[in-house]
Length: 92
Image (cartoon, helix red, strand yellow):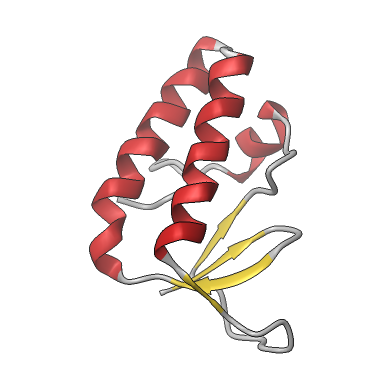
């Protein structure tokens, strides 16, 4: 699966990592529902770091269709809220 981190680029990520990423996504959703800004920021950074660690970066000139788009590290709680689906950022 190709994942885009807004403002950074794309990574190729094996589907086998989605269970682990979904845990962070669920935590992020809970923090957003509570309006926990500091918790949201910490979990968003953890989610993006995990994607970077587990994924393989695509070259900057590669333009593959992204199956999943994640917010930039500096995205606000409100910006991320606008990106959500019923399942969160990462469809379950």
